[in-house]
Length: 600
Image (cartoon, rainbow, N blue to C red; front, side, top):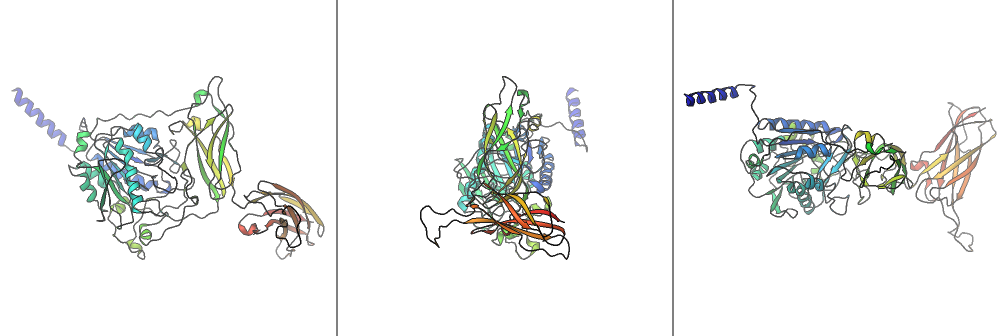
């Protein structure tokens, strides 16, 4: 009777479990799938849509699915979620090597994730946590698989608008980007630049297949596959399948031999309870911060340092290893933004040119390159296979690229700070594009993690004018009055904010007439502009010579004797500097001074 009752009970339980909507207990070792979306500006919603599709697909096979999305995808949150993960899906910015930004591999920020520096800060600002953090702080499930979707560098490419480089460069990027994840426990690292990750999630969880075969059967497969032995991870093999034989590096995999999707179940860990990760704070030391300031002139591309006055409670100090992160948020930058390229444009062999603040060959921090994103497409459209050789003249054949480059003002790059008795200081590099910026400052611990919101609220921002090689500032009243036909004496200060002197001093020693080394100087030119229709005004109101060879950061103080127009009315007195070998600064884009003058 006991045997019959047990059998009946088992059958009833099986029938109940089969009913629609029945709640079933999670398997003790269900594979854990972690889906991460980093901040990528205006295309973030498209990335979220692809991530949601992947997460929904994963839930068809396992109840253990964790989503960590911007604006709350900080490193503490991502690090917590990654522990014991069997499948990791990441969509966001990528930062790899070789690249134009560094002379050598930099593990603290390369080959990892682009995440929110602080929680709730929006979808634009991001900070890189590279292979060093992954290797040191993450333990994946045995034989885990990592899927890197729509990243720059991970599959061998660079960024839209930048040259791809050689096949050798692409191989290095692929190998480097996988290394940290493999050290954390991954058996395979897949990178796809133009395919939504749902395909891989379904293929990995639906059965027991070769991971290499799953990658080869991708809807975006091109048939140009080559393989090579991994240098960073001996014993592993890397494969790449570019759009064309030697360019278009948007598909790759690095894996150990014989790995199958069935091993995910065998290596799966029990579910990890998700808790709010601890965030470091400086509030408990009584930190008070003054207004930051720059130690040197804000000249485009120059090396400088930021200084922050501070105080703490008596007997307390800021912790060792404190870092300062800076982000240059453009307010008024004249340099035009390049367009992000589509695949069809890349296929045609054209690019958008260099990034707006990447004109220096190898600046140390990775600057943000201002670029408008490519048009947004639905996840389904992105997952569909595109023509192997799209027709650049046929818009219907173009494939949208959501591999997005850096945007100027989006990158937070913490630098180790030195804390003295009253000042905290850290190095920084000025943007290479002149203009006006908002300098956003954040405080980070020695691992790069940003301190909590209460600490960040203590930090004041700055508005910074970054000047170029040629720049000027006029110190003059905004309004004045003059008598018709009489002389207006207008005091003016003219500052040389550029990097070169205006003119040259004469060479020492005797010289003769016509000598090429005679002194040269800039002149300040004043012109009248009438604000009354039909009222004429003289072109030139006065010319004043400035000191010989006016040096950078120096101010010349002069008085302009401008004869006022004979007709009463409202006028502008425009002040411009004409420099030897350069000409009118106004013609070079340097705004002239405008003084509104009432002529009575």
